[in-house]
Length: 149
Image 1 (tube, rainbow, N blue to C red):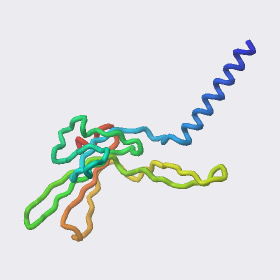
Image 2: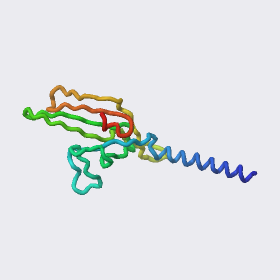
Image 3: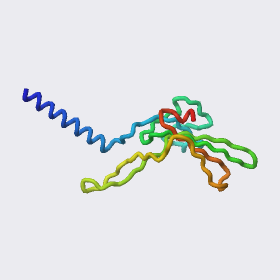
């Protein structure tokens, strides 16, 4: 009986220790999946595949994990070049990762925070004519939600 009680205490201690370690080094926000596509192809030899928005087709090729985001993002714009309208769309994980330095245990350590600066919905950028384009950012929560914005 004593051995079983000792084993349960040890198991509880190990579980709590593991939870404390994970809480310290693993982001607490749950990862979501978003569609990702870009306007320009990545450099010639990166580890990232080409995901051009001009070929976007909602396939698995365009799905990425977003470990540092709780929102997906879609950026749309219209550029007026000599009365030729050019439309564009970019899809990606919302930028929410903030890396800070904290002083803990008598040393500086890197800590990753996932900020929540966005609200669900669309935000149109009005720069009062400083650009030739109209830009709208749309943010949403939920897997692959930036495919239907």
